Figure 1 (tube, rainbow, N blue to C red):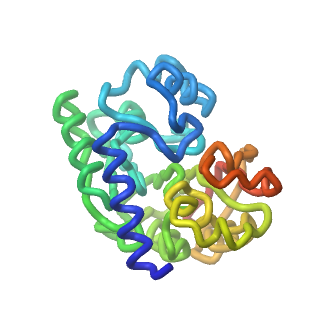
Figure 2 (figure 1 turned 45 degrees about the horizontal axis):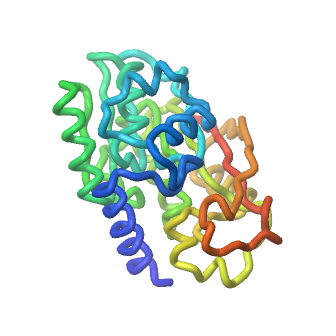
Figure 3 (figure 1 turned 90 degrees about the vertical axis):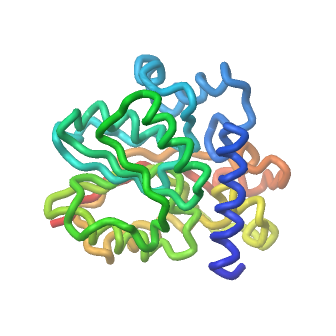
Length: 257
């Protein structure tokens, strides 16, 4: 698929999710609100964290971005922030003197996040409409870049990591959760639009993904967690059981020297 067409399909798909307020890419996919709460807990979110969130936000993640190393007063940038789920959690860490920036390509997601911030009287948050391959953020301006199951949707992942490296300050951190492949997927999945917006067919091979991060300049890159992720649970219409186990959710840390 053409890169422009890919981005437009992704934007439209997630705009619809923002309107419907339902999670599609995460382990909590196609579940009712009670089951979604259990799904979030399976991803690693604590009950007290979930209770602290505005009621109108939801996660599309494939894992949990660990926020424990975020320091008070710091600036955090979320790539593909959606309705702001991880941003609102990070805002507790940076405090009133810190800042949270969320960037997303879907106006509907940005509007939802901004409204939740307004209702909750969050003063340290800024949600910006933009492309994560061309971030509307200044050089060397953020302490931490986070992202949860979004970079796999980008047709130019290397460009995303280059941009992340550009905006992070020296000694700043990259902390992401994403879906990668352990083996090549069959043509029927690679060419499926449903599989693409469902976070599968756009995913890169694990070693290629890690190499892109390294070649962008990050050091001390570490895969701190790897979890098997079912193709059928993400895009159940395909039913390709023989490729079960070829997709995994990984949690990665990296440092900008």
